[in-house]
Image 1 (cartoon, one colour):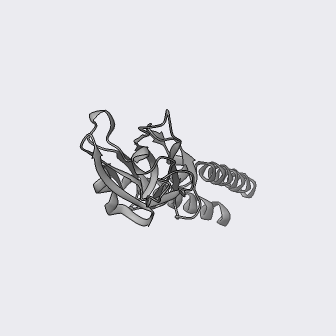
Image 2 (cartoon, rainbow, N blue to C red):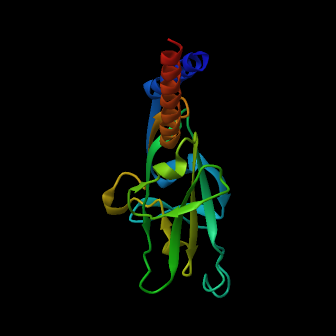
Length: 209
């Protein structure tokens, strides 16, 4: 009987924790231009802001022109953004717009990586709204990294570009809770175990009665 009461109390406390986790939370909605995005830069690995294409600002590789132009030996550069949150993420989406003005002639790319610690990364598509919930689940920090390269030089690779007259080049939406939300598998296993203990306690009670 003692085990029965202990398991019942623990289960009740666990339910209270779950309810509390879902009762309090927060969310963010960030729409950023290239200039505004620089506020969140943790590490600039060779990029700068340009304003030269149709009046829209964008982030581009910072290459020094040599006697042969920008061709052949341009390195890949990167920029890392850090978004520190006051809640633990349960749902999140991200979108970063890019543009390659001379892609029909010269090679260029701009890759978007997502992480939670600035060390381990997962690549996701650009120019689309991407669900990154599973990649940042239960984290209170979201890192985004752009890896940029352009054969032609800075104008050939446009990152966080406001395409099609849009107001923003980068958008990040996230919501979550003040406490770590229990993993679904953990809830199921704990519930099954508690139910088993309850049946065991009731069976012993009947035997003793």
